[in-house]
Length: 274
Length: 287
Image (cartoon, rainbow over all chains, first blue to last red; front, side):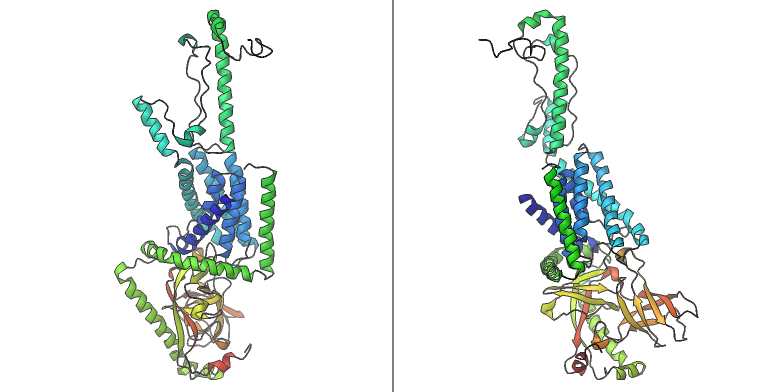
């Protein structure tokens, strides 16, 4: 519910800015960006389908109601609702890396502008002809995608930029190998703990395990799931290396006390031994 | 939230709501919603305009020196008043005497003009603008809007603090015009597509044997009750004649005097000056 209020406020401000400011600017190319579309695409890509369609509906409704609009009420709401849902769908299937998000923004804004033009053409608006759409669309999509990429980087990356800088500085100085701050740090997928049985340096797996790809972390189920998968993959790889090391050095096997995957299922079938 | 069944039900509900709004509006039942939107967004746009208009005039169409902007605005207001005055004066000249007599328009002194500022323009392909005057300033629908250069359009909807103007360049706008000199009657339509359009108007004249020629000027023709257009407002000049002789209607392209892409100060003709004989004329329904 609070999301709906936030999106309603964002939509209201965006639409008022669109008609009072952006539409009155004379930008090169003749076209102007569509702030409403940028808002909907950004929310959709950064969040999920439900929030994308909610933001799309609210923004479209505002566009229908803001005074100079003379088209039918509901037309923009319909189009933007679909655009928001589609962007949410797209965003959940993409890794949140900047180039992919920019490409997604380009596709989504092109689709959004085309859908608006198509809706106007279908409804028989005599102002819209294929010739005028052909003139206007490419430039408008270019402006939209640029704004959208900027907004996405700010929304997704902005929170993490200070943290990323700190981490880098810390690593460079070798003072703080792991700087962890705030919620962002807690959400980072953690590396699996070294099996405590293998305290000695001789059995530490050769070569560092593949690090989790450093991407812009967002609080989405998708990313969390992927991180979990990567973590379990590393654990498995560790286990394999541990087994190998153990077969090579049986002494270590005797010293081991904890539950390594190799151990599990063999010892203490009924609870812990007393 | 995930893309679950709940989300899809929500999508279906929102889409159904949009389609319902579309249906209600196309059946003509969304007037209260539109007036509510006009009141809310009109006020917000008026407030936002205080911030955005300096930005628009700085980055915008015409680089007006900031120092002289106030004087320019005052002069533009003056010019609009004079233009309205001139149109009524011209109408009284010999060329219009006959028409004026026919429509019982003679004896009027001029028009009352309310000066207004454009605070918002249509999004996308809409060719309409919002003015910062509304019902509380005496604006009513179907009133003529002009600026210092010529005809701008006509008021289509009014909310308490703002009003919407359909520009003459919109493809749905039809303006009855008269060719200066030959006196032919015709109508002008826009070619639409807002800022992306060609910016020219299309004139059609029921040909009376007199051929159109580039360079001829057009003024608005008289409308019953001065709505939607008061007579004699300059509209544009013919730049190219499209159809040759022999066609039933002659078609020509017209360059409008008003620059629809850079509207700022405009005037709304709210009625004749007090004491004219127009009231009884206006009360005639459908005349």
